[in-house]
Image (cartoon, rainbow, N blue to C red; front, side, top):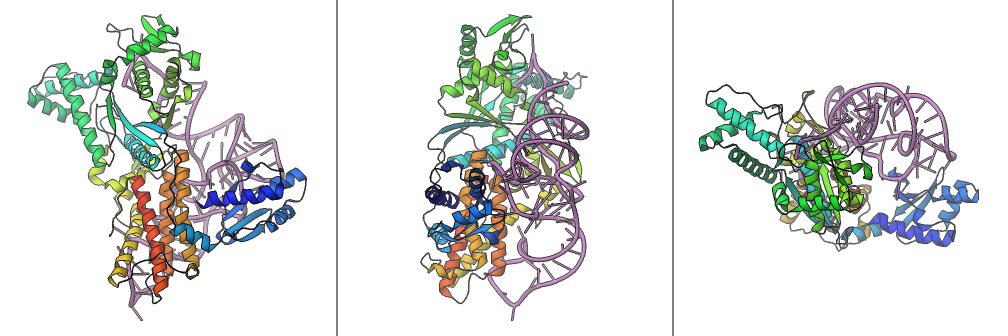
Length: 534
RNA sequence: ACCCCUGUAGCUCAGCAGGACAGAGCGGCGGUUUCCUAAACCGCAGGUCACCCGUUCGAGUCGGGUCAGGGGUACCA
């Protein structure tokens, strides 16, 4: 990629000029904010001047005068003391039309990435949908950059919530039978419970445990279906019950006992998480009759299982409501002998659904949910994904339903897709006239500002991918695609691709073809379709 | 009380490990189509980067504090 090459070149040059004055890795290369003043810039003169107690501007001029390289078209010094480089067009075109760079950032590292993991007690809400979009894009991104990923969905099919769900359904069934009922405290009240109750009533299931099983299977199936519709597939769906059956919980309990990290108090078993920096110790086995396990215990067991499957890194993507668990879980993982940074957790912040300025609150229990199912009933998958990938993970996200429904210019998804469709249309047109694009042209034929800017922007793609991977932030790519589309549209307005000069036409076809490939690649990573025509 | 996230143009947000006169989209106003898709493009208006201190040659960016908004702090998952 350009940035890497220019960094290497400049470092080499500076190394000679500066001798040992400055460590190579401290030389930073940035993009220049203003197009007219070059492509890349270094602030090295400030550093050198500070060390030598010299004037920064003069130092910059001195350094600049001594740098020379065929890929650098020109060097200029700007006040206060920036040294700017403009890349030669030849080099840009050579890179653009050459073999696409294979980015091997991961170097075969195995990453397990767990996301969504919504409880099978109701439909998937929009925050989980956001996690799904982010997680799925990250998987695609990582797989294209030299990582080996495994995506996993953890199903909480045990525990109190599923029993509460079953009880809620049973009461609804009784209600359908004309009885007055009392819904369990903290139970589930959504309309979907009544629908499910009707189904279960028809099947003639009355046993509470059978109701529970039926309901859980029902929701797992529903989640799989809707995620499939959303373009998200998981390598593994792993169940809490399976982890328990495997004996992982006992393993974990043994480890705790061996290391003297668990103790009895008030009839419950506690884990000394404070030893690892938690604010308080946590209960792992409850004091109730059945001595049931807490979520924490089972979750530690689950993560032990993940680690036994030999992954180099474990990543979880969680919603904001799970923020408080991170510490305890990491302490639990340390308690079984793994380093605290074994598990990295990324929190995607909440999603605010807005409609005509009014916000719609969401809670699974309250029954006023806006679910992924409902969302996809009204808004195309591409739009939902794009909107959910427009903010950094840590940003609260406003999802404007009205805007999402707009089928036109306001909607940035179509803006990007349209750029691709437009290019494809031009290429089709050219083919009808018997013109194919060709990489064999004199580089000097590409010289218009709009062409060069487009070419340089396409080349930035590799840098963007690198940034997105490094930060685990797909939105960086989303922004880039909007930017690329804008630059293409501008180019289109200013320069004709198909024109009377055949060689120029072919060159421009090659340029826009690369642009289309880049948009397509980017949209694929975001899990968004890329139509040939619109 | 403690923890996490956020506070940049009327609205929604970019601003990448400090740098060059603060950017985009939407909304507002005004333009562009004998020609490759107008789902496009161009121009104008609009900001004491919440506030205060500090570090620095240089702070929207880093540190401390204040204020404001959202979320979280279960023997629920």
